[in-house]
Length: 134
Length: 394
Image (cartoon, rainbow over all chains, first blue to last red; front, side, top):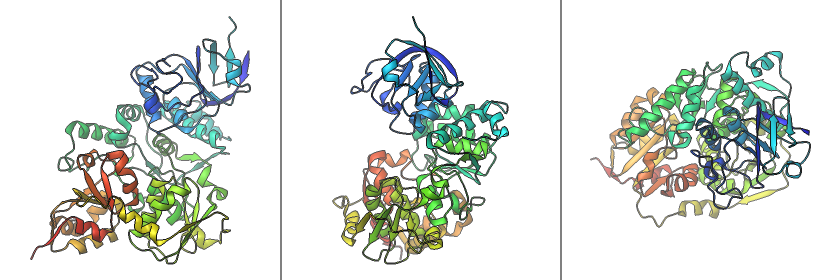
């Protein structure tokens, strides 16, 4: 199944879906060394976003968050790709400088069609997300 | 978003990876905010200079970029005076990293002058309706409001992208309709000097990121408007304000008076001076947030002439402004105060080692307690100097 979307940061990546309903502040919520969510109140507390297709509504918090995404990338623990409901500048800029494909405004609600552990391809260069059937 | 064939080529990487990433950032922001196209900008001011704020990741990203900026570009304040950092008590490890960041920017052709007042500097004299891409919140406010130029509040990477591409996305404050005031501020008394910074500190909290128009009892000077805008941007997120009959856009046309009104009374201004007044004595006094203008340096020099100060006092300004007026710097420093360049009390780690500070800036009053964990008091320039413990030399 292919779902159309809007391109924010171009690229193609495949990975396992990791979903959260909570917004993410990369400065403070995520350990830049390990890619683990370290904020105790966060839905993904204790889980690693490294290599995952991270689905979250949008970013929040300090603009330094863009550089934290770049640090994750340099440390080899950035997400493979990211899907937002609505992207904002902090995550958008972080994704672009870190070469992480990022899309938003999917034609179908990602929280209805995707679930944790699904394998998906995010092709933001051609503006679609493909859910691979097992 | 419409792109010219040339811009498409840039986006497809025909001019290298750095330019590709830069234009990708501009296009992404344009898409998020509904821009129709990219527009040329006259100059850029790039945030993300202090090692305290961007860290090693920021340094790496800037170092990895290649190419040269296409328009006059300048930096925000750094974490230290680039020359006299040792006198400020800056850790040599921090100083080394800070130098590396500045050198990385220099390699891209960016002028390594670090200031929040680029409009005082050669090559950055923007005028009414010029499009620019500036970052520092008070510089954004001054350019938009006092000069009537047009800029969004750029983040570090987006301003740097604009500098490399020579363009920015056409949205927000570049558009006429976004520059209309939506909330009225009615001030019931005459204000002068540091009252304006106090006004911004009070009103910013209510206005948030909206565009206010002020109805004042008297006309503030440009230095006073600088203080007002800096405080509005710090206690709120105001990028543009108008003053009826004073600021250029509110002189050129009569804006419709917004329905929502915020009344401000003298007592609210007085309350700002009462903040933390239980701190009987401050350990350090700072003036120059935003960086001092020549007139402000003249005022301070006049006030401290023939006096000795008993406490540490910093007068922050742009290096270029200080270098143009060595006589004023000398007069001020003769009193024992330091004329500090390239940095300020908000972004420098040197501030952190003091327990209490007196400032004449509504912006510093908003940021110093949270960013530096230092208790802050508010006073006029004259009272700041009195707080520094003036002793007559004779």
